Amino acid sequence: SQKIEQNSEALNIQEGKTATLTCNYTNYSPAYLQWYRQDPGRGPVFLLLIRENEKEKRKERLKVTFDTTLKQSLFHITASQPADSATYLCALEGGANNLFFGTGTRLTVIP
Amino acid sequence: DTGVSQDPRHKITKRGQNVTFRCDPISEHNRLYWYRQTLGQGPEFLTYFQNEAQLEKSRLLSDRFSAERPKGSFSTLEIQRTEQGDSAMYLCASSQTTGVANQPQHFGDGTRLSIL
Figure 1 (cartoon, rainbow over the protein chains, first blue to last red):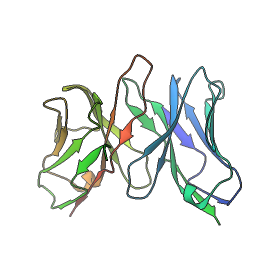
Figure 2 (figure 1 turned 30 degrees about the vertical axis):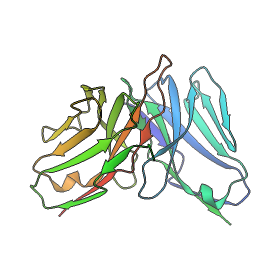
Figure 3 (figure 1 turned 45 degrees about the horizontal axis):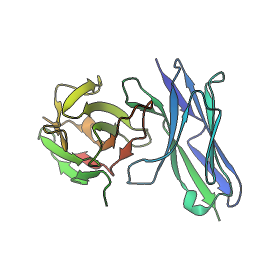
């Protein structure tokens, strides 16, 4: 069955550093992958979508890569700020337009 | 604010009672999704509508669950004879289909259900 693993439950980094989050998947070949941010008690907020024919996507301080050979996506936040502290979710198309989410990585940026 | 809105935000009920949640999607979006999220997990897909047609249901959606989107606008999710295991955050999302392979989904802030 499909499986998505996000590298760790929690990641702590110092303010100003680059945070790198990993999403690995198995038994699947998605046409695209999405990253969402979720704050406590709130719904997920869409950040970036990357398609299988794209290697890299950028948006301001965010960068996503998608390696369909390794079955992996990396999500980078450069010049991290305490306001970036949240849970970040990786999501793949689950077939017929729904999304299949990982369990998320809780990022804490320490001032 | 023209985002996805969900009502109520919190619902506490006794085991065995029926509950109904409402979702108002972004007005121009023709697709509407329901997800369930438990603590420490990512959202899990339950069902989705394109306009008023319910096109897919997850095996997580037992016979006690029913969802409707009668006029292709707002949607309701009803849980009958609630059980302890139904305690979760129920999230609604919407998106707009285009010719391009799938668009981002926009989520509401969910209804948190607690079963006593």
